[in-house]
Length: 293
Image 1: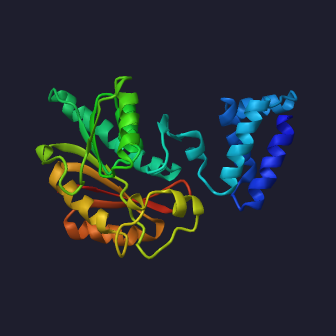
Image 2 (image 1 turned 30 degrees about the vertical axis):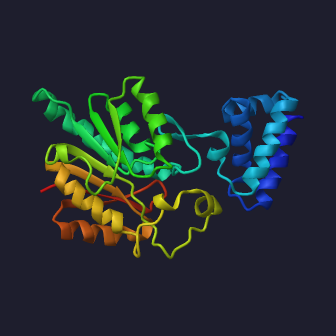
Image 3 (image 1 turned 90 degrees about the vertical axis):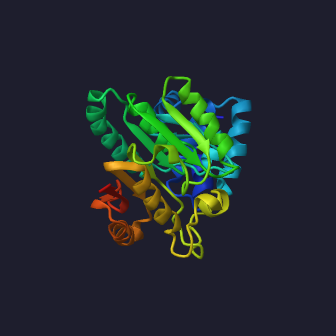
């Protein structure tokens, strides 16, 4: 089947299913199955490229599942985050582009800490609380190769995916270390020694159902809901950050766009200094950072 016709067919199917940017999704799905990128797919469309019968069978089967609002990442078994290719599937939260802001803030803080720690003959130490797929921790470890990163994940369902991702990037030299546990009590051995703590905790209020079926039906509840007001794990992460960080250490937490003022107030009440709001690429409040007194 001609790739041009296949893109049109999937675009129409996805549009009818209510998927945003159906043309983009169609191209991404087809390119993933063919093992190429969208630019290469575009070139093949121009040259009247075709999908072979086995490829077509897979594409059409995936398209039906995607039209039923199963996440594309669950179909392909992988998700992309910054420079990472991560294994994902049922039970683990799929990393979002918005979270790259949190990772960048952590990376910048670690790079700044490197200048101080190297002079003391040490490596900067970063911690990711509730790492999920490992996206943030592995971004820090791979983009700041002089740093040591530790991460904790609570979920039994997510942990096998997290382990697989950490093993992959540790094999390439990343100093990224994973353990299973509760972020409230994790890493007691590092109390007062850490340079950077980052976290993307569950922050949806329990009585608020996400509007996107991909989230409501397929993301694990443990990674979504954060208590009555959504901030239970933000409060816990704040306390853990104060325990772990050295004076002057950097803390950053992701939150829902409407929660910015509440998170700022929460951190200030806990005694954090230099509390600052940051906006994502959509100009929405997404992360609050602070400095340990």
